[in-house]
Amino acid sequence: MSDHTISPGFTISGVTFENIFNSDAARGRPVDFEKPDPFDWRLMVGRFAPNSGVQAFKTTCSFTPKGAPAGTGYGLKQIAFHKFLSMSYAGLEPEHGSQTIGTTSINFTWNLDCVGANVGNNFSAPSLPFFSALAKPVANNSQGSITITDSPGGTARLVRANMLTAKRNFLQKHASETNFITALVVERPDGAHVPVRAVQWTFSTSTTVVWTDGKPKLQSVGGCSFITLLDPDDLQDVRKRLLAENAFLVSDTILHKVNQGLSTAEMLDAAAAPTPNSPDTVRKFDGGTYAIEHSRKALD
Image (cartoon, rainbow, N blue to C red):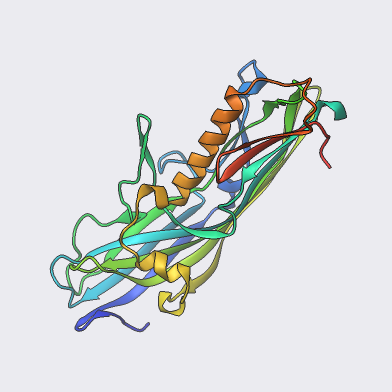
């Protein structure tokens, strides 16, 4: 494996990624089904803490610096190409209407990924712009390593009120797909970021819900798998810029963009009153990157 030149006299050698992919975490599963109110029932995809069980993706990147000047840092950056997140709901009868929910303007774009943390109502990304960074320097001619775990996903309500029909709508389908690039990045003493080597992988989930006598049965499949190894120097587009850029705000990350859009759309939806006598056939709550649309019509 060839050395990667970071600056004159400074190289990185022996870069490897040891990957573990587990599709179980990408399968939808029920949560809160013990609660008596169906409005509290949820579908969950992914796991969100390293000690909570199976993760979808885990990688350990190993590398050896040679000639690194004092003050050099190392981390893993992750960028995400979000394709879609979509959910469809339908009433028990055609006149009960339907709903479609999901991401909008964020679809088919590359964005910086991060590990988020909530302190009260404030969202932060402690390692920004890295997904994970080493706290201590790596000695020259010694092997360094960084391990991260990730399990994309979230939760979705199984039952929602239709604002146009004032009837319950039930989750029928939940699906999403995202590609990720996880890259070893060197932070030089002058603050410049130099991407060295990367692994590209994909995460997808699809759940169909069958309702019988008001009870849901989930049929779910998920995928999390390797795509390819990448040399970032071969990327001459937005991916290279995102991996090399060192000035990012929390608001630049895909997690913030999606969560902000979701929160806004859900807040607008929750504050709205049902309008069953309205002549409207569609009622939409748009959060910018995420939208909830109520319809009087049954699903196609």
